[in-house]
Length: 138
Image 1 (cartoon, helix red, strand yellow):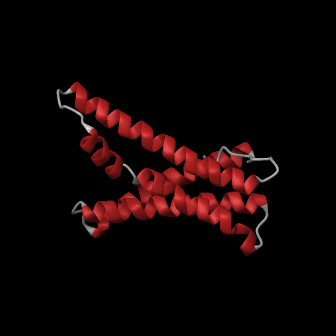
Image 2: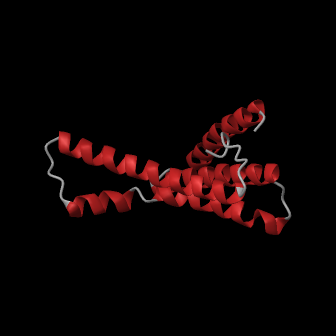
């Protein structure tokens, strides 16, 4: 989302924070819906306790938007202009992606070497987004 955004409204930082958090919520809702629809299609009944369970298990999608949003919010305190703010938020998102990939791999029982590979793969995926942002002039 950060790579594609070029907010030019009256409050670009606030708009970006709102866009990040709303995007996180929409993706969360889509994931919850998809999992529940998948469970229903396999014959499992879906009640409110299942909806809550799935919603909690997918909440990390919303949480992933929090650090980049915080970076955008704090950027004026760092004396950053708008362009530097977007780059900071993107860097925070990529580092966060790498960190969670590494921690997830370790939690799943991967070796430290496998976890490092997971982190590097996620770095490369993040760099694709960075290159796209740079190429598009955002």
